[in-house]
Every structure is written in structure tokens, then in C-alpha cells.
Length: 346
Image 1: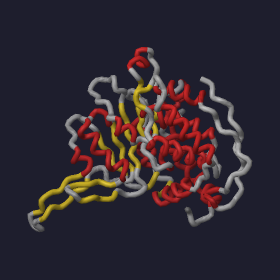
Image 2: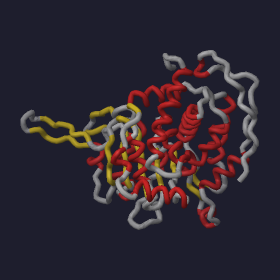
Image 3: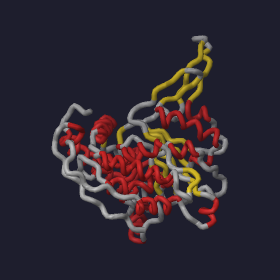
Image 4: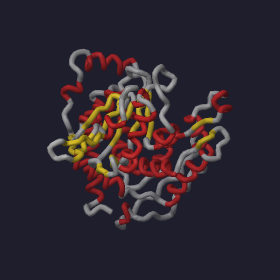
């Protein structure tokens, strides 16, 4: 539980996030929903996977988000010859000390940009597993803590493209959300020619928030209230993926936790001290779809994981508004009851 006033925290969150949002949107034209999802994942202590075709600004988005925060940033270009030790680090024999000295790898940063992560071999991809889940690296029996806040922003090309390796299920499950940037609109692309036609805006991008501010905002997000019916709704949505006939692999309990955390961060970004079913619905596809594996028959029928999640959202009953809710973060303030939401339509 936080030790400072929760309403002041939400006010601070709104101001800081607005600065970061404006900074990133100054580089990424016409994609406000993508920028918002990126900030949601950051405040929910998750990791972001950006998947799309080359040239739509995946790396630009990751760099803009990283440079907007005054924290340590490392970029890893994933290639077929990249070794796990290039990511985690290696112990080197020191002749003078006559002992091994640990040389940290690129993972030891607060924001780690993994560019084209699926161009490296699965062996190298697995070097991220421990750091993304446990926020530490173990080398030669010794564990080293990673800095906080810690976020991995990885980009990848569609698996069908030449020279790519599909991410293992355990790797995909560690990413809180997957987002596709998509092609810009004609107006946004025209504006991009004016902004990017000369010097890249990344060169003039300055930090607008400090790492300690982000840590305080993360603490504030942890205190967002989630009513029991909303928690049950999250569990029902994730559970439905495990029994759906078009899926051979449903979402994990980690996905349940990620969806809850993301909903709390989304509520805070909206200036609310409590999460709504709308927050869950808005994030369900981004948080769940990349973890699911369709059956062979579903693939023949061209059924995507996103379509399955949308169908589950439509069929799962939305909780009705309770009569009373406890205060934000358990601090005793009254919270307005959330309205009953109508079923989603495809």
C-alpha cells in the first residue's frame, strides 16, 4: 500500500503520462491508441511486443518511449549469430585478481529495446526468460538483480517473413501485450513527411519524466481498486480460452495476472481510482491473443486468435454493478459503482 495521498498520485500520474504521451506522439504520427497501450504496459510493470511488417515505425516507437524517460536504455539488435552471453553477460578471468569478474550484458538497463527479436535463434531468445519474469540474471551460480523500473520493448516481423524464428510459447507468455503499429492514414503519412523529411525527431527528443517518477506512478497503479465481480470477469475470460474448441493452447494464469494489472493501469490513465469491465474488454485482445494457439482446423478456416478472443468477449457475461464498493486502495474513500456494460458485438 502506498504511503502518500492516492488522489494526488493520480493527479501526478495524469500530468506525467501526458508529457510522455505528447513526447512519443511527436515522433509516432497518428497512432494514439498504440502509444496509450505502450504507456499502459509500462505502468503495469509489463513487457511490450510490437509486431508488424518492416518500415512502419516499430523501432521508432520503442526508442521514442525509452528516450522520453530519463533512465538507462540499451538496444539489442537480434541476429542469427547473437549469443545468449551477449544479452546476459559473461564471467571473464581477471589475471591480476586471479578470479572471475562478471561483465554485465545489454540486459542490465531499465528499458531494453530488442530489435527484431525473432531473427535470433530460440537458444538466444531464451536468454530473456529469467530476466523478464524474475527481473534478475543468473550467471555461474550467482544472481544479479536488474534495475527498476525494468521493461523490455521488443519488435518482431511476422513469422511468415524470411529469416525469422517463431517465439517459443514461454517467451510470448512473458510479454504483457502485443501491438501492431499498422500503416498510417494518408493525413498522418503526409504529416510524417514534414516532420521526418529533414532531421529525425528522435535526435531532438529529450526526457520528460524521471525514473523515480515512473516508480511512484507504478506504486499508484498498484493501489487501483478492482471489485470482486471484475476480478471474476477476468478469470472467466481467461478460463474460456482454455476450453474453446478452436484453441489447442489457452491463456496461462500469468495472462490472468497481466490482464488484471493492465486493466488497473488503464483505469489510472483514465483518471479513475477503480477498474471497470470496459478496461478489461479494451485490453483483452492485446493481452491474450498472442498467447493462444489455434487448432489446425481453425487455421484452415482462417480463424485468428484475435477473432476467438472477440468471440469470448461477446459470449462471457459482463458483471452487473454492485451496490457498494470499498475505497481506492483500501483507504476508505467511496468509489462510484461501475455501470452494467452491454455485451460486445463483433
